Length: 456
Image (tube, rainbow, N blue to C red):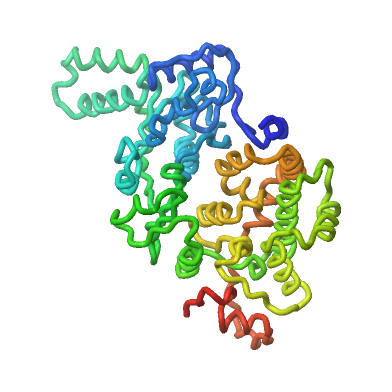
């Protein structure tokens, strides 16, 4: 993984912790949550406060996420909101933490000037050792406070203040007044500077989890389904009728189509679909070159495409299917019939403009793993696992490519691959009739993939 780390593709954008005061605050919070401390004098943390260096020191990558279920967190700075989440067990965790920080940024900034804020993403269950428990998760809340209990004490002072103002004889209650003064010395004037974190609840309807071989739960859909990389029989009779494993390609294709979750890359608006498919073809060549033991050191796109020409007969069927699709998009060639059984099928799709687009793109990345760029962007946990199994030559090529063509402009690359044009406003007058396009007419009649009927 050294190449990835050196190029900022792994453990990138973490927050450094080196000041002795911050290290001590972290230790107080760590001890408060787990009973452990670190002997390190400097380290890096992600959005949740997890440190890979401390994980290595403790021999426990889940020291803030016991059982991979209720993730605990330590906040030393609001800058953590831009950091990644390492060892993610649920796809929703990072977004929830970022929203919590942004919604409470002013209050958190005031609190962490004096102490670390420690907390937990609380599910309705404490273990997901059984699939039934996983599906019991419907929502989660966030519990957070400083290690000294500033929020708790401020709430207590607020209640005492209300009592002091409302009770007629409170002016003569020396015990009440003394207690208020004692707490106020620690919290400050909560009437002028209230210390309060928003009570936030987050729905957990559609998500991916690393548990059970990697599982996608799509509950909030017209046609709900579970798609798992593990044993699908474990989820039978758990309340969701349709359960597929990653080998059920036809069923997954129909699920995506029936819920309007995907669109063909070559038909998507606002992107160069043919160029994206050509890059996917290059990645397939790289994978084939790895299998053949060819050297890819310093290889350019021209070199990769020269390899494709020289070894065309040895390339897998995914490559040739995408080549025919590019020919249709660029030259008006015959529409290629690509069924969901074809290994190239999921390479031709991307998420439609839907609320769960990131989750859908993660699923598509897992179903088209040779597209290493999409795998890295949309499913980092799976990318790192796959990277560890590649040959040295493929590792070098992929690391160089991502550093050169993705890391320098992450936002631009994401927009070019997965962005959606804003919907056009209704014109004041009716537009002229559209010019008929034979390719569009074909898609309208039979659907883009033939084997999967288009809903009317």
